[in-house]
Image 1: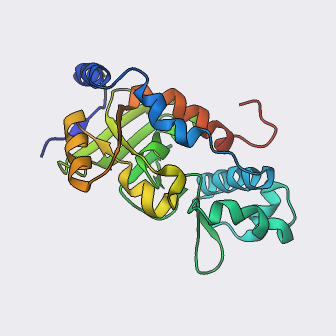
Image 2: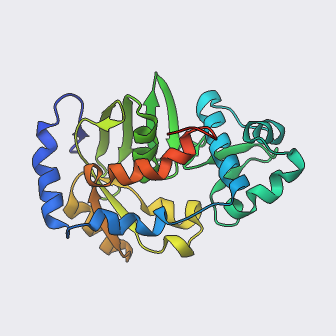
Amino acid sequence: MKTVDTTGSADCCDASARNDRAAAAPGSAQNAVAQISTEEFPADAAAVRSAGFRLLFATGEPVPPAALAAEAGIAETDLDAALLSVRDRGRIEIDEQGCLVGIGGLTLIPGRHRFVVNGVSHWTWCALDVVGILGALGASGSVHSTDPYSGSPINIEYVDGQPSADAHLFIPAGFQDANVRRDWCPNVNFFSSHQGAESWAAAQGLDGDVVAVSNILDDAVVMWNPVVAPQGSDQ
C-alpha cells in the first residue's frame, strides 16, 4: 500500500498541495468551514468545553463531574444545564460512570485519528479536530490516520503547530443538522489525494468539499483557540 509519510522535508507533497489548491475553487476552504465557524456556545457551555478539553489532554483520564465543574468555574449543580447544548448535538462523550471522556473533538476512545505530543497518544473524533488542535496548541508531534479510500496510512509530522507537508481532508455538508460525533465526524477524514477523497465521497453519496490541510489550517486554528485556551486567556 502507498504510505503518505511526511516526516522530514515537505518537498514530496508540495506539488500535491498545489494541485489541490488549483483544483478547488478560490475560497473553497473558507466555504467548507463557514458552517462550523459560525457556531456559538452559551458562556457556561463554552467554559465547560474548554475546561473538559484541557483536563482530558493533560491527564488522559476520564474527568469526574466535580473536577469538570471546578475547572470550568461553575457550580456542579449547574453542570447539566451547561452541557445541554453540547450533549444534544453530539459534542460530548460521557462514560457509564458519568465521567467525561470526549469533548472539543478530543476523545479517550481510540479511533482512526491519533496524534502524538511529547510521546503521549491522543485521539480525535475527526481529521479536522487534529488539524485545529495541534495548530491551536502550537504543538510539535505527529499525526497518524488512515485513508478510507486507499487504505494507505497517513503520517504527518507537526512542528510548532505547522504540518511539515500536506494531506487532504473531506469536509461534508450538513454540519448544522447533524449529531456531530455520530453522523458528521466519521465522514471527515484524511486522504492521500484530492481524487481519492472525491471518489470516496461520491461512493458514499456525500456532498462536501475537499481541501488541503495547508488551506484550512488557519481557519481551524481560529475555531480551536477558544477550546484549548483557559478562560480569560488572550489566545
